[in-house]
Image (tube, rainbow, N blue to C red; front, side):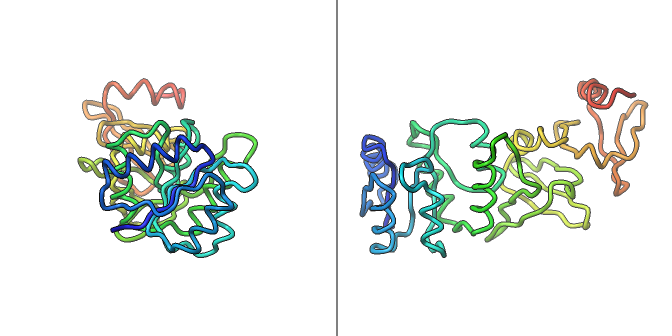
Length: 247
């Protein structure tokens, strides 16, 4: 059995999540249901859980402050939060696991299986906290890419383009390396579309800062700064015109 601790200042949410875990994740045993961050901190230290379900916004001490008091995180972590599109993008930017209230049972099962594969690191949490604390909606200069058994942090400006590989996406960066990430190109597009990236083809998402040349003709395509050719779909040409005012 996997030991779990739930920390949320809403008692009804705690009880419902405990019930859902019993129904959808029978291998997860809830050892503590905490409605205050102070109690949750004590229970984590006492019980040494395998996985923690943590609300972010709580009185006295929020979720990030609780994690800071713990120091090293030796458990899997799933944030539980109310819906906010900016917060969701922030989670995706930093490859952190999360569940939206009200929690869907199927989403819970997937999130638990995914979270158990790796534990968050301090840099992920630091970047996430910075994003949520700033006055205006701001994304950091780096993005976290879940890769093999860990997470790779790369600067967004160094991403040349992303290519769809079925349910995965391959990131190509200026150093000549590439990383295969278990996210669809649609998921990546949602995260990067506000950072000067454009889906120019069903298979490609490009960093507009790395476009070197556009070649017209039967096969419209872009030449990027690394001399790679990227096809442009006919229905995406207008988007390029809109962004650049040329063609």
